[in-house]
Length: 219
Image 1 (tube, rainbow, N blue to C red):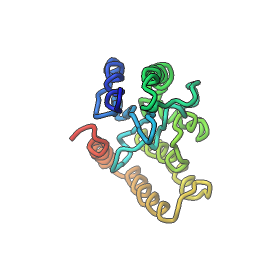
Image 2 (tube, helix red, strand yellow):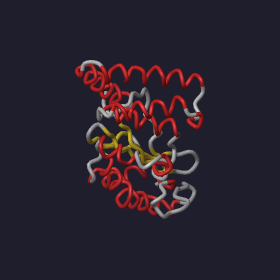
Image 3 (cartoon, rainbow, N blue to C red):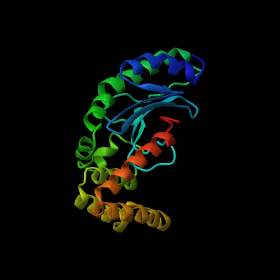
Image 4 (cartoon, rainbow, N blue to C red):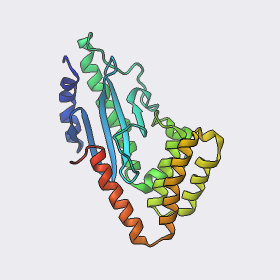
């Protein structure tokens, strides 16, 4: 195994057996418009990533905001979970650890949050709890997850409470430019929440279609 693709090829049968499709060195499956993605990242060493992408949240690029490296996934009891190509004897260990972490820990978590209802139950346990699983998660992204998921579930009072939290509380750590952008997006959600249901449905449908393309799940 002398490159990332070789490692991906070794992992591919495992992910296919669990219903994943492959795009280069990323594996993904989509249920209820929530994508589960695992990928290989190589900044020096090789790392396994695992993250979700709710397609009803507008995005222009694929990102790992709602996830992180598997070595940071708190329930998984393995340290230094990476592979360096100057030590090829460790490649098989890396592959085995990736499969073990996904099968024992991340796939069961995804099964529980692969619906908007399951995801909001998970998020309602709090930001610190969510960070045990999504190590890249910033507080603003945590609120973004909650706001759009509550919007999809028509839980508009909860959505408005979360909007107030992200825009009014200083611990949200957002710049003025971010504040203005969040406010513009969330004002639109509030307008949709009190407007005709077909306008909301059209917005959600169009957002999902755009996210599918932006995240390279379809052309």
